[in-house]
Length: 362
Figure 1 (spheres, rainbow, N blue to C red):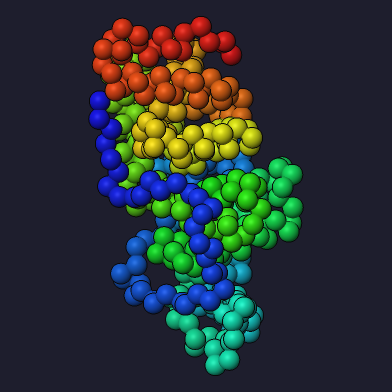
Figure 2: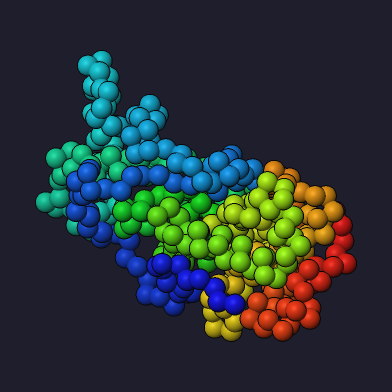
């Protein structure tokens, strides 16, 4: 069985061997006319806070905010937009704009000789200010609630995470900040505990993971591949999914693919699973995340079938099972699922459903 390739995206493994990036002498990108800029929208990994485990298909596959709506909310919360300014609040808006310009100057000139560099509003276009203000608003909101229950994320380390995120987004304003990026950066910060190295590794990681974010195209490919794998390897489960509201679109896997299972596992288990995903292209498949997802479904197939789960049931079930999975079992089963998909004779003799037989029922 062949696995469809996403339209774009590199499968490079994040590595600390990359040359340390210089995050202090960045040049501001050329402003893009509003009519040529893509609509700013993003998919939330769940319907609640970034650190929660609540998830809904509505939040995963609907346009949450347009660029105009985001701009309005940013203005209400002190984002400093030009529109809607009143004479009474004119002075306050001006101060907000000056503060935003100051933040931009820090991104562009921090650590360098700033002689001749103007910090006035005229240094930046309105389009650039709007884009940066919107992204800073999103970053600040998510950083403050990123894995706050984990010991590493003290106030000082959250500030480091924010610095890295701001530097990355400044270099990639065409994509901007999307909810979920902090989730991908946080484990790298915990392991590396170094801003420059974490930035370098995160940049490499995003070459692959950015394709899962809006306009990347990879997420639809993941869903289609999951549908094909389940249909061929476990027809009984596939038929149940079709009969109970037809959730063979596999939207319940959205968060798994978006964050490489980060929200599904204990923090210590995330490191092991990510290492397997990164090394898999060299020993098995560039699409090993599919077989991890298939293994995760297969582990609980009997529970799904016995309880005749519909779409709402399966979303609720996997939300409740988050951080309770047997990771070692899943890591053992994923290669078996891969072999079953690449060897039709094996899939016939040892159906995938047998791989999940005998598991402890919840």
